[in-house]
Image 1 (cartoon, rainbow, N blue to C red):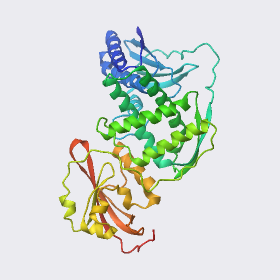
Image 2 (cartoon, rainbow, N blue to C red):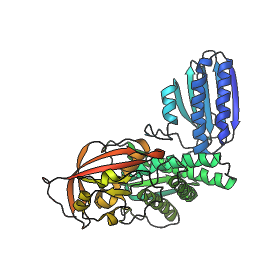
Image 3 (tube, rainbow, N blue to C red):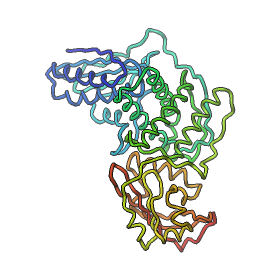
Image 4 (cartoon, one colour):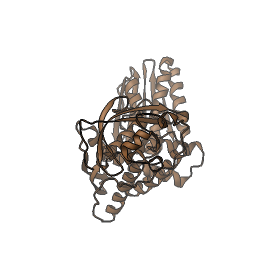
Length: 418
């Protein structure tokens, strides 16, 4: 049997150190056939500890001619959560990879000291009991109970996944630039802990078979989480700005997502100081446009179409509308082009639209593309008209996309008042 123990700092180089050590130990015991898989799995687990825990990392590698066991311990109490990301996502696959490739895996809570995430390949001796501090197990005290009244569930789920992507990419980009300092690292750690607490509180809503449109939620915050929400707001503001300029691969933050995030953070901070909860009142009609790079796309096909056609980019910004679409909706080209696509969506449906649009950009999953659906469209005068809607996605340069929607009036439904 060969055993190696590593004490690692929460820096990018630690993932490479752990990967190399696991491959060496496994090969030393004659099981080089397990080296690539073991190295991949330890890289995913250590990377998650670097990004989300931001504490010293303890790695134990135990290998025999029959198999290998790797255990990664950090000091964060938050357990890993499997995310629902699509094939185009740039993050969120660590737990899924371990589930897919490891023969056995698990997470053990370490009393008073965080958690251990482990996996096994081949046949190994029974896993050692979790390391404990020798003190009786005590639950972390709850510092604050914060109420989020009337939380929009679909929008919150989209924000949670988008924020998870932004945080991971922002941290990795900061490390790659070698510009990170101790203060920035501390804020990133606080943001990560606050976001983990929030995700744990919201998780039951997202796995429910039938989720409500809105729900009253109570957040249970650990010591330090309140200050962490200040860090979370600042870090996500910075990350969103980087995404808008193309410095991150994450999609641009929709203004409604940003508004929800600011409301959540404000509720945590204000209630921690004794204020009463302020209910989520929905979206406003004048959410500001995000600053995004223009797409390289030819609008001629839309401008000359005889049908009612509208094109929008992946920032939800209207790029062009055909004469028939302008007549149908009561706008001029000068008035409509440049506005956000929510301009022609009834207010009561905007939360659902932004949530679905954000999730599509993150996962490429969709329930509306390439199929005809009947939906209400909002005209300039505030009235609604039912239309048969068909939307297709057209990829353009630089990983960007344009969405082209054809609208056909559904005369059988009649007009509805706005």
